[in-house]
Amino acid sequence: MAIEKPPVDELVPRGEQPRTLSPSKHKKRTFGTGMLKGLSITFRHLISKPVTVQYPDEKDLLPPRSRGVIALKEENCTVCMLCARECPDWCIYIEGHKSTREIPGKKRGKKVNILDRFAIDYALCMYCGICVEVCPYDALFWAPEYEYAEHDITGLTHEMDTLKDWMYSVPPPEELEDGAMGPAVKNQLPDNTPKGEGG
Amino acid sequence: MIEEVFANPYIQLALKLGVLMILLPATLALGWVELKIGAHIQHRMGPMYPGGFHGWAQTVADGIKFVLKENVVPRNADRVVFSMVPFITMLGAALIFVVIPAGQNLVIEDLEVGLFYVLAASSIGVIAVLMAGWSSANKFSLLGALRAAAQLIAYELPLVLSASAVAMLAGSLSLVDIVQAQGPASPTGLYIPFAVYQVLGFPIFLCAVTAELTRPPFDMPVAEAELITGPWTEYTGIRFAFGFFAPEYIAMIGLAAVGATIYLGGYLPPVPALDFIPGIIWLLLKTGAILFLLIWVRWSFPRLREDQLQKFAWKVLIPLALLNIFVTGALKLTPWV
Image (cartoon, rainbow over all chains, first blue to last red; front, side):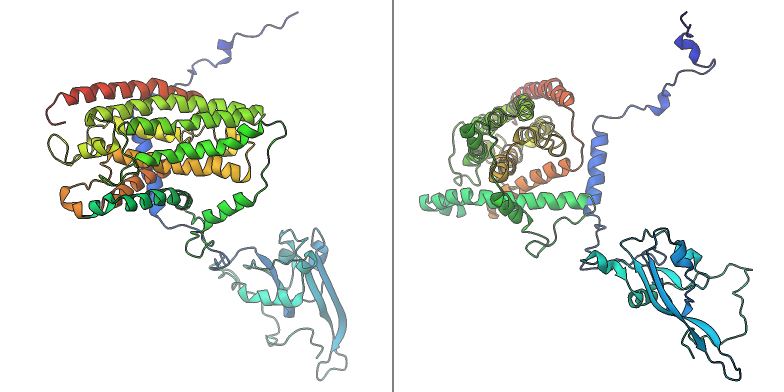
């Protein structure tokens, strides 16, 4: 038994007219004006300044918050390994050892972790930024850098010295919003005491 | 005075050789200008490094690259015809320059049938295109050649019809006479270029020239990116450069110079008072203006489809060109033309 299809006309809901262009939108234009308009546009572009940056000769500054490379602030790192563990493709290599920092007036010193190696393999890194997000001590930052290409793929594993060098281009943190609580300051430790120096 | 110097036969011979020698460098220069204009229209800079100053040597380097490339001939190709094609296209393009006057006596040959000769020389390219397509032993080359031939023949007619209106105005086919008729030899003695009377004819001529050169927006048969330059699909290296690239630019310069000669007063200054500037400067300026227009149009408009292209030639340009002849005939009845 053949299924009876409704006639095509009935598929259109009642009251809905087939779409036609309203005559007001379809103004008659003089022949050739569109082409002249196109020519004038290209001429204006011809005499305007090119947007090209002649890269190796002149360098373009990236916007300060560009996600170019990941920089390391070594003194903030506690070798907690959170970044290495969260990294989706395991491109962060961290090595460290334990040491004791002597505190004057106390018998036992404080145990600290000392960072020996911190390297990111940029051949693997996919710039997801999870390591930056996950770092509890603000040791990792996005830096607006882009000149770190290498001739050899193994050279793309950038070690701690390079990662530290990129810190200079990291912009200062954004201003806090009105009414926000400032960062909690505990114990007022002197800021310039580097961690993990082993006393 | 300068005309007298040029009338010297030895100087004329040197100049004739000079024109031939200058064709290839002019091609390279025009190619560079086109790269630059196209780039700046797209907010780019174009070539900047070759040669130091704004990449002036880019097209020179391109030429060297073409010469150094391997020269492939398909196995089933008709070798003789295949290798003859670049000679014929170059010939057709270079022959145009024979009759273009840069001064009343400064012309390689002032043929009495100069205008007819130009149109005949510029249509030699059709034969070369068909030869290229047929001898390549490649069905896509052949299809491209047929498309190109269809276009070239279709646009030959408006070209001839619009040019014949100029011949009617001047009462001569000689290009020198045509130029003189736009200046001292005109009935009124005023310097009025024929473009003023050919309000219809000049745009028709420009459209037909663009199509004859298979330049955008009339480059359907060539369509570099899509059809790998149609009839030139199998051409490589130096044969491609001298079969396709160089003739295109040489013919472009030649036809622009013809347009400047028959419509814009050629070597004549716009007003008699500027007569002290040599005619060749005026000719170059006017040719340059038309060349700029051709390049500008190329980078502004999209390509026409095959059917639109044919319709435009047969249904728009040819009737308009016929109408133009009629109007020109009516103009001839007035005393001031």
